[in-house]
Image 1: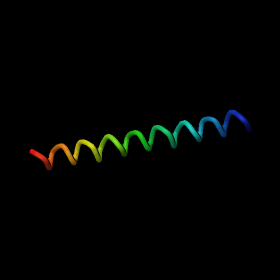
Image 2: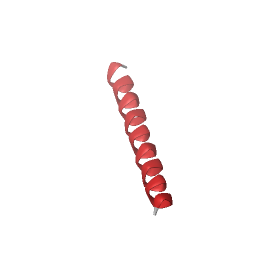
Image 3: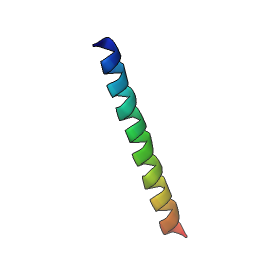
Image 4: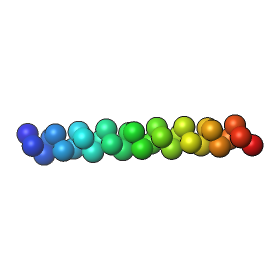
Length: 32
C-alpha cells in the first residue's frame, strides 16, 4: 500500500510538471 501511494504521488508530480511545461510553451509561443 505504501508503495502504491508513492507511485500515485509521483504520477501526480510528473503530470503537474508536464502541464507546467505545456503552459510555458504556449506562453512562449504567444510571445513570438
